[in-house]
Image 1 (spheres, rainbow, N blue to C red):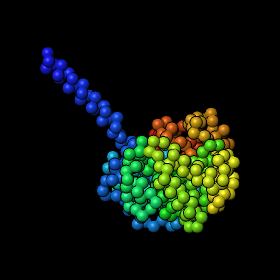
Image 2: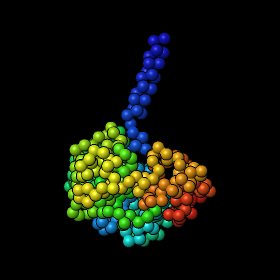
Image 3: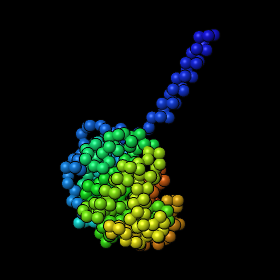
Image 4: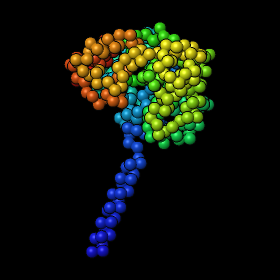
Length: 344
């Protein structure tokens, strides 16, 4: 009897330990262990020398390529890159993977999408070695101290750091991978971001000139990250940084009053319709045929359309569906869309 009780207690203890470990261990979805792996990779961006101020940057910060044993991409990510390349023929468009990996073209849809992107002369796909990238920058200690690894949202916060760091290094334009670019951003001011709401300036599309005021603004953003990084708050290190910077540059705590102003350093906050015509809480409009006319009207003055991947990624969309998202994709990333066999 005592032995049975001992065995039962042992089993209960093992189960408790298992769940304790499971709770504290980050899943592949939200850890950045792959960033530390040393394996075969694409050419590193630090060796590619992007033209300063004439480049558009996308960062792929998941570990999906490491998990798949080769560089992979989704159709919606590929669409973002193609749309930028088509609307900016005089810019180089960089898709940078933080996960190590190389091309292995084995006939999958992802492989075909990557080959489609490479067919554009102005698209460059490379690796971004995080440790090398942060060396001798204002955020070197932030990375080396392990704060990003220990964050509650490591991949998201790594993405936040990298977008500001890339603009600090090269200037130009940064955009998230859940967008479609529908107009040339060359028409806009050299230093800008866009309001997401009356209380928040978003970091999904940003631009800083590579020298002068633009570089100073990017430096201020990195110093804010260094001093105020918070691994427990999802928004603090991305939109939080550019919101705090915008308020400082425009000498106002009211985001609504910043819109349209040209502030210190020539920095400009564009209205939400410029990059975020449909607010995040109404993201489902992009997948609703009955909303097509409304969405088209909302985006009539937009340069970029943001599709809120954190909320919409799991919503499947058949290539035969006629919804606002598919309408934008067919028009602005036609090659990518045509390669999708069932879903976009």
